[in-house]
Image (cartoon, rainbow, N blue to C red; front, side):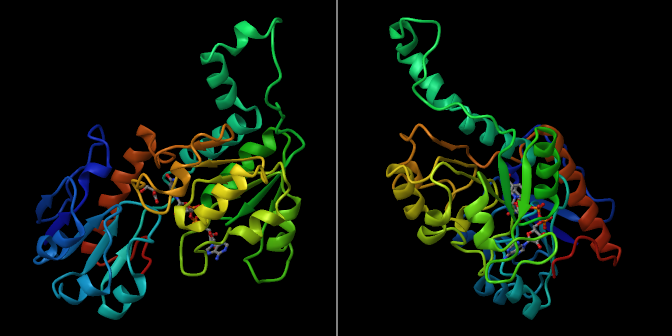
Length: 316
Ligand SMILES: NC(=O)c1ccc[n+]([C@@H]2O[C@H](COP(=O)([O-])OP(=O)(O)OC[C@H]3O[C@@H](n4cnc5c(N)ncnc54)[C@H](O)[C@@H]3O)[C@@H](O)[C@H]2O)c1
Ligand SMILES: O=C(O)[C@H](O)CO
């Protein structure tokens, strides 16, 4: 079996990626540009990708391909419908980041609610020396205790985040899918937007969730609410968020993801970086050594399962 990993560099060099325990030929590339995908996968039965895009146009030219093994939970870079139509199986990685990503989301929430970023910058700028007393109050400092977290998407990561924040004394409400009514355990999407002090996004990026949060939704949020996005960039209309931040219509935003990564310098969120209440990290919520190693082990498990004729973590 020919296995080709198109973007090996998306896993840190410290990760031990064992070779599958069956006869195979392994080829890996540090990175792959869109125009190189077909040529590199021409003889591959198994394509391994983290973020390289594979769509209907590529699949049409890859008759040998049998499996796309995602080195990620998110599958928005692969056209699942086209894979189904082409008879190409797809599997992803599950549960590997259930500590890492919730901890990152919580870090963003804490940093924003206490304005750590703004205070750190002002200390660096000499503001403390000018304060004339032992402290100063340029930015609000808020406790998460007694705040309400609104979860959009309630899978592995969201449930672990819920466990963490409940220990801090936060209340948690979970949104029903947009356009669907409230049901036991789920409040309507609009109710969650209006009631939560912190909104955190944990659903996949699909046609249904693209720009789930836009101008209208931002306007429904409390004026001091925080928006956390460790899911996917496309979930939020970035222009609308930039306006809301600049016009101080929301309390702050903590993002680990943007719509195109790495972001172009004209990405709206790059223009939000001078807002003291906006924090952007470079898609590293998942990237603890422990989580990445779990991902790498599960990636090879998935491929071995496929080779043995077992369905494991299959999306298609
Ligand atoms: N920033 C990072 O480093 C990082 C790491 C891992 C995962 N992620 C992202 O986080 C997402 C969630 O990961 P997970 O492990 O919790 O996945 P999961 O599959 O366990 O949970 C996703 C949840 O979203 C729900 N959902 C699907 N469509 C929805 C919709 N239209 N509206 C509301 N909910 C919807 C699903 O029912 C499911 O409960 C992934 O899809 C990925 O995009 C980011
Ligand atoms: O979806 C995921 O698992 C993260 O984005 C890392 O690839």
